[in-house]
Length: 345
Image (cartoon, rainbow, N blue to C red; front, side, top):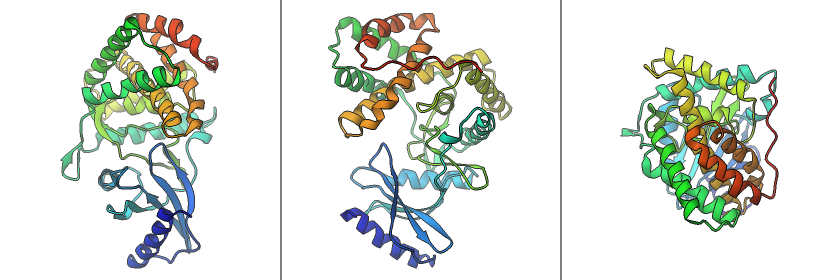
């Protein structure tokens, strides 16, 4: 047990006593870390358990997590309840949503029902207030979109593939990034989770869904969370099936008054191009996690991410030069094969 875990253990014991909750049984047990600097532990008590979070204040701002959790819970969005938080120490105590991630349950027989639940929750997030803790959600603006896509250039191309970019490479990247940025900024803007995928959605004891890792929520493109869910970096589905789910969400969002006069075709283009922007970013993030942070396991998730980039860029004439560039300049540098296309059911 390291020093911060010892401090967290002491804080949890004092907090449980202060809140008149059940006394701890045993010590903290590691649940997981994530792609950030946060760590999660489970504290057993008589008849249940709680989640203790270590979020070093010099690395993580827990205010956003607490404010969004309180606001979303009040709007019937299924997130953990924050029982206590110490911002100076960087500790939080949460209700426990269990261990069952959505990911391993996504099989042929259950996917339709589980995604239907997840999309219903997503409509709730999109309908939620854009004011959190008295402050408006920050916008998913041009600066952030550009900074995210630059991760692909800086960490995937230059650091991971060791590619020396020439003037043509830079021009193609700049033109592609501009297209994707303008598409994102032109979408209907709603509250977005920003990491809404099968490792951040829990299946609870009553088979309902719980949502975690929401602290980076912003006001952003309406398709962002949907593409995170349906073109997940950790599970792939046949194109026709994904498109059917997108159509189902489009109908729900339209009924909820989120869509307006936007056509289904326009929504699908937004979805495709938003996914391209997201997967470009994620390829850079996975590379950075390996190179900078020593989390090499994320390299195994790059092939599926690249596959989405190649497949979507092949579908649009305005992305043809970028697609050809990927085939000519990038794919020959890979030390791994991209996944085969997912068979239609």
